[in-house]
Image (cartoon, rainbow, N blue to C red):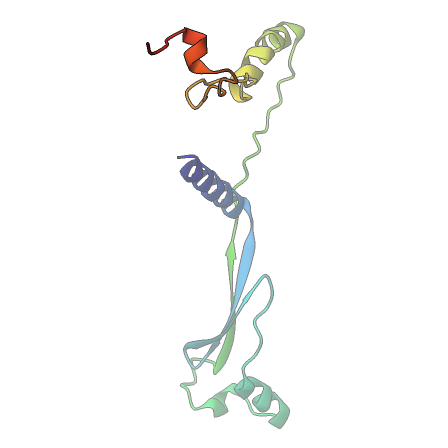
Length: 142
């Protein structure tokens, strides 16, 4: 049960981290298919675009229709949510005192209690008697 709780806690922490983070994904689309993907930066151009730039070809030489470019760079941006609550009200002394009074109770509910030593006598084996048992209970055969 403890392992399950740890796994769930880590998954929820990762979910909050990912949902609050802003990142972008760069895509390089060549002839309608994605050729390169990059996270947090611009995607690398394909070999065809590099060769066309070196030889001085234009987008019309690609063989695609004139309405569509041969290679295209796209950027997908994922905006993270902002968990900060903005307030303009300042706290007064009357509002702070109940919070100070409840602080020990809140800490006691969050922190685990001090564990006391638990002594169990179940696995205890008594020591062997160093004297003769027959003499000790005075049972002699006559």
